[in-house]
Amino acid sequence: MNKDDVVIYTDGGCSGNPGPGGWGVVIIADGEERMMSGGEKHTTNNRMELSAAINALTAVFNTERLKDRTIQFFTDSQYVKNGITSWVAKWKQNGWKTATKKPVLNQDLWSVLDFLAGQLTIRWNWVKGHAGVKYNEICDQLCQKEIASFR
Image (tube, rainbow, N blue to C red; front, side, top):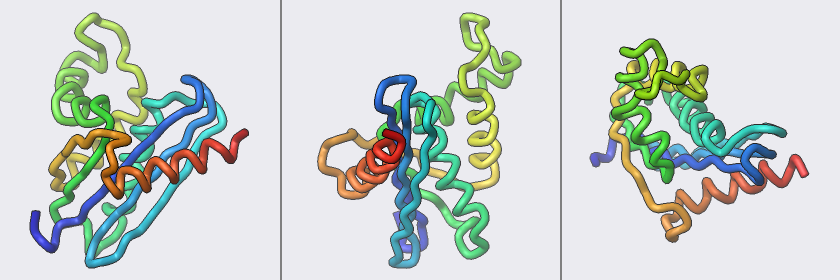
């Protein structure tokens, strides 16, 4: 990682699955931390994980001074990391069908994430959730605050 890299942490979650959900993001660039969050009244954990990633990457993509830099992306979601780094290519090749010929769940969000990933230089990293990783914990707190707002 070099000093010009943009660092992103994301988390998403639900209270019940489906249920009220939230997502949280921390973007670190040029010594500044930017936090963002959002949520939905009725959603799933996976949709919130994807929403966190999409919102983070959209923010970087729409920031002229950041969009051409390498992004170090940290997520505690194997679904997001594995989906974008390996599964999505096969899904597209198979007409957005899984290996068992079923429609890919959350295709609407995967399509957006795939587009953004194609526009940016991203190094995808997995971190263990709830393991004391500072920015992952902050993302979780943002997520929980959003979930609580729907109760």
